[in-house]
Length: 312
Image 1: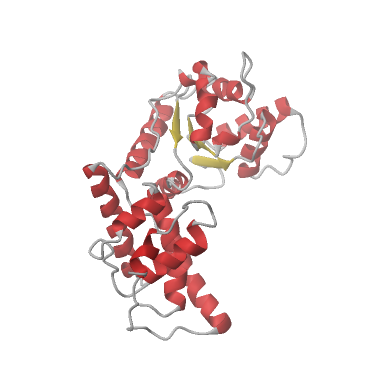
Image 2 (image 1 turned 60 degrees about the vertical axis):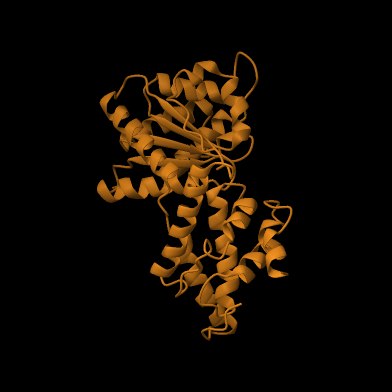
């Protein structure tokens, strides 16, 4: 543990101090090649939709383990688009909805209307809600619909697949291009509806990085280095951690299982610890405690590789 500590506030002031820095970290989007590729696909799908208004639209499937950063990447893309083409009272270029478990076709329409601020979302049958949702998409000139947590869609394995048929109908009807974000649990849903799959671009799933691949190890190390640099650049901690030089990347790879978004979440827990103890950088102590307090209880890890190093 470093001895070059600052003196953080105490009590409620400490919580304010930590919360401000953690909020700063959570607001960061670190460009990562696979996430940048998603942005390129989003951009293509959106522009294709603008050129084919009123014609059958295309969709895009993105499946990945929890913590892969797919939702964060989508939100970063929305921010990018809205900086270039700001939303107004009559223009909402991209709509992102987050589905609840066992989402039916009616709940899907309710989620869309909620995002548009429809005050009568609780009234009407499924057909009425669908008409209002489609009318909102047209009125606000929405160019892309991002459906997150798609594994929560309540589909049926048969000829009538309920929600997936509704999605297919929206694409066929030229309503709006759609991106489907979800975990691997949604894969079976797509396999059960080849008609929906036929309306999708090539999948852009985010597979975990493989520690046995030299290229994947390089990508992982570059991502961690960018995270460390941003922590200093945003004045969250004053010194770089140099975790690669300290030989801690294999432990990070093991805990995250090659899912880069989980590295960010582990850093989030470790930063809370480091800031509270007045540290000037993230260290082995913070990572080991973060795994004990967050990764293992949340079932992201079964063992703590950093404990072997800290006990050595």
